[in-house]
Image 1 (cartoon, rainbow, N blue to C red):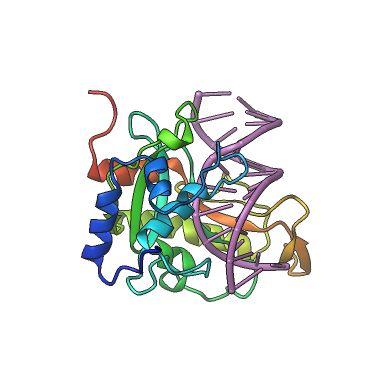
Image 2: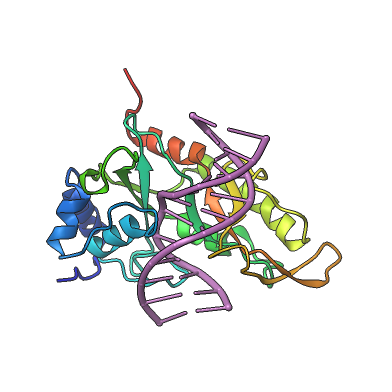
Length: 224
DNA sequence: CCATGATCATTG
DNA sequence: CAATGATCATGG
């Protein structure tokens, strides 16, 4: 049976803690969910499995996964030393209609204001079924962390607003990268002269260095 | 179509 | 070999 949404933070934290140490195969079998051999075709499978097991209810709406708690859940693939293996997708980057939106009203802020990080063994040499769930971390950005994110967000929003060329090299901790099914997908945007154009959709991503900072704040990582 | 869940795979 | 740019599946 599908778990109901958690009603408070303590319950969410407890459920997440109960998953630590189990393999993905253990969890999938608990719910009778079929496992793929690998993630080449179902890249979001791990995240969807954990959302299911924890009772997330946002259902791909642009808001935090646990709507009553305002908590977003992110699985984070880690290597043997606990370092992140991938960047973390946050949300789509608005290309129109965002003039005047401030940081605290942004979707990036709302998603990152409270996050349940669930580390998962992610090295490709470990068969998907054998990968284990690590110790979860309920996190809220410190003042310093929020300032870092905000500075990047403001820089990136300016690029978006003024239709300037964007690469993943902008931003220190937050970056903008393509976010689409393939290169043919286009969305409405404005060019540098303010003319409407069709442009490649972009998404906000957290770089690995930032995720590493978060994990460092909570866990001992790396070889002794 | 667009937003969710992300990882893949080519490149520098 | 890390980082950037590209891509895959699902659901409303």
